Image 1 (cartoon, rainbow, N blue to C red):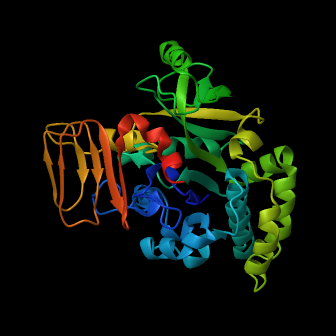
Image 2 (cartoon, rainbow, N blue to C red):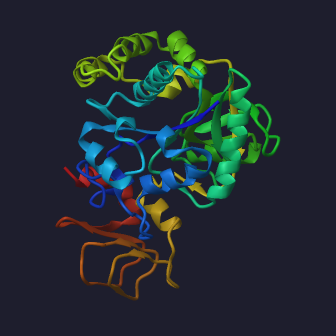
Length: 352
């Protein structure tokens, strides 16, 4: 049974403005200043377990050309354009129905093992990540289970959803008891003390047949639209049908559509240096820092008496900052942000 990787790359990264914009969001940016964008790093870490021709990217129609430029190894027909944002359940269904149709046309094994992953997360230990993913693939290949990767928490984080496992047995695969929304601080502390709660990384592993049957059962309206769209896959009418029918899908996440309803959900704990890089603070935490705790990305940044700052000014020739403590300094395409790290949740407000 072949492995297929589905990379979800339709987000707009609004919390990283001005570095990330709706025209060019964070998954396509070298946010760490290491020469590879986040989506390229996602692609790289799957190469040892999946051929490029079995990798798929689901993204906004506006970003297709960017994906082609940054991931030329992936066949263009594997880059799936969403004409409208409908959340993760239709996004995932689109890819899985397309994979199923390709397998039908090829006339070989009608099933496949699939990993679904965001495009914009950070993994510091890709070898350990692949070991976890490979264990999950081995498990799903022989069952109708769905496995979601859980991250062993290192702090009482209020910015992530949680997975409540029935018992945390180390690195084994564990039955999921329930999913929890982002908690307040006191609840997050209790989760950490309990030891049976994991961060929800939004990484899923399943067989193609499993997710198709699960969507038919728990999200039939999405499955019905996909069945209709699939009739046009690999025909001259494909683009028109997708543009017409995809926006009619219910706007729903895979968590609400399937994960919280299916009785056959498992998790595998992972400890491989994961972060969703959802905020400037998380970028600073996961970046190389100077002796004063400043994380700096830019060709020529000079700092004097600054500490705890995150600076991302890759488009500017020379930047001097002085006397700033725990600040964000970011510039992109003539847009400049200077604000306290403690105010980063207001960045969406600042853009208006």
